[in-house]
Length: 116
Image (cartoon, rainbow, N blue to C red; front, side, top):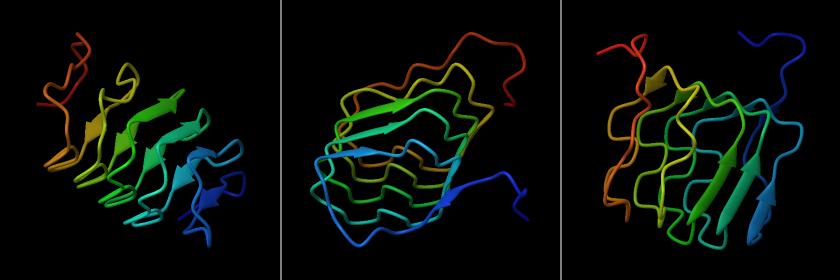
């Protein structure tokens, strides 16, 4: 259930190289799946990324999230990411969140409150 103040982004009807999501607080499951023209996402208010949100966005190389808390299952599956999003505030990373992406490593923050 969404809170009254939440803004949720659902699949747009266009592709663009740099996607700015200035007011979104959540990205819906599958919102950008297969959008091959997106190379960078800037979404500083987003706290939750749904399952498969950026799956198969093969050109996606860079992300900028300010206070990300939840990354859904397969959220960045088969992307061209060169580095992970900022994981300092993340409390949950879904199954296979970065599977088959171009990442060579995922660096997790050194925190004691991360679930195992």
